[in-house]
Image 1: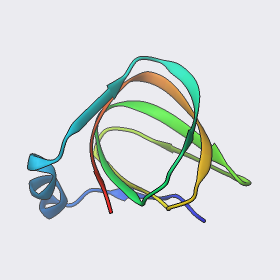
Image 2: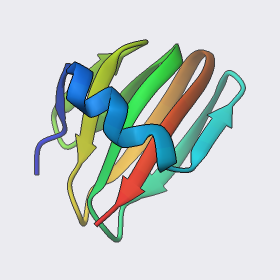
Image 3: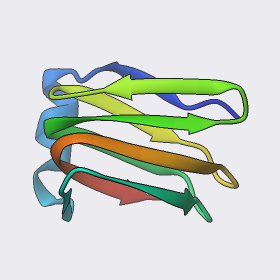
Image 4: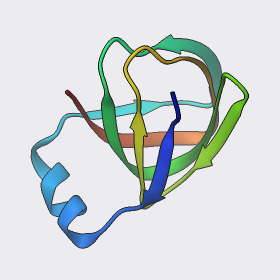
Length: 86
């Protein structure tokens, strides 16, 4: 199970307009994904650590978390993201 991070395209940014938004202040917490989550990072920075993988992302990034992933989020700068579960 790999976390995928890439730069969002213009089409991606248009797609997320109707998605819900989530925000979080700097913190560290454990999380488990029961579904695939796709998200677009609006602002802030975070690192997610899981199963020998560590990824960092920030504004403009498109991130996909696989179903079944257990991880630790480290929010470095207050983060805002649009997200969708599938």
